[in-house]
Each structure stands twice: as structure tokens, then as C-alpha cells.
Image (cartoon, rainbow, N blue to C red; front, side, top):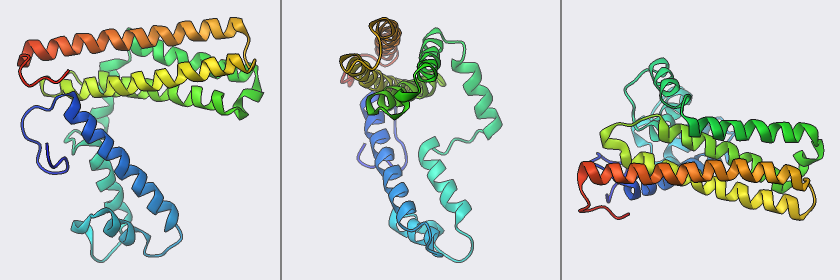
Length: 223
């Protein structure tokens, strides 16, 4: 895939999707930097559109809707479904999944931990723990929201991102224990929940990779 912003061709594997998602991360970071830089400029939206290369919307008029729409297209791959249809599909796809429930339960448990010890809200390791646990939950939701035959690669790519987020959370939890910011009992429960999600992601990745090979064969698969 030499041009990820152009017309998609063929079936993408997890590595194609990883490259695409990385590109989108970079574009979103660039957009946010430009937005912060030009937030008070009356020509903000036109400047941002030019810097982002969105030449198709350069012209007269209010830019806000067009810029927001184009950014949304980058993230949603120009999905034809309406917002309500997409939300309904997402809810039906992942909310009942046992792995997603475990990940969501982890975020709830961490919130309660913060409620019990308000000082954790100012600790970098605790913030990283909570942020990446929530990120893992979000990436799982994205992975589990679509089992379409053509998007197995995207599913695996999102699972790998969820796994990376959980790994960061595990490191953060260990740091909280080493700095005696949480009790050994709290760490034991937290570690058990984190490992439950981590192991579930690894298992699911194996299942989806096996399904990929079953559907498309091993030729061309780089896993």
C-alpha cells in the first residue's frame, strides 16, 4: 500500500492497517498542533486546511463544518452509515463481549481506586495507568465492532494497540507499587485484572489470525 490516503485496493492485513492507523495518528497530532497554534486566528480553519493538504475545501465561507467533516473522514474511512446506525451496530457488536466487559470493568475498578485515594489523581504513574487502561478499552471496542470479512486485518491491528496499552498499564501499576502509592493487596487485584485483559487480547489475536489464514490462506500473510 504505497498511498494510504488514496483508493483502497484489495484486502488489507494487520500490517497495512497498522501503517494506516499510524498515519492517522500523525495527521491527528498535526491537526491538534495547528489548532492550538492558530486557535485565535480569524482565518484558522483556512490555514489548517491548507497545512493539512485539504485543498478540496479551500475557498470562501465558513470552514468549521468542512474541516471537522474531513477530519472525521480520516478516522472513519468515509463510512456510509449514519451516526445512529453506526452507534447501534457498535453497541450490538461489542458490549456483550466478555473481554470488553473485563476491560471496561478494569477502568471502573481504577476509578474506584482513585476515589479511595484522591492523591493518586496527581501521580504521573497513576494517570498513565488510568489513561492507557481506558485506551485499551476503546481499542477493544474498535476491534470488536466489526467482524466483516474484509476487515480482519483492521481488527488485529486494533487488538495489538489494545495490547500495547495494557502493557503500559502493567508497567505503571508496578511503578505505583514500587513507590508505595498503592498497597500490595490493591496491586494484586489490579495485576490480576490487567493480566485477564492482556491474556484475553492475546488469545483473541490468535483466533483472528487463524481465521485470516482460513479465509485467505497463508500466502502473503506476514504474521
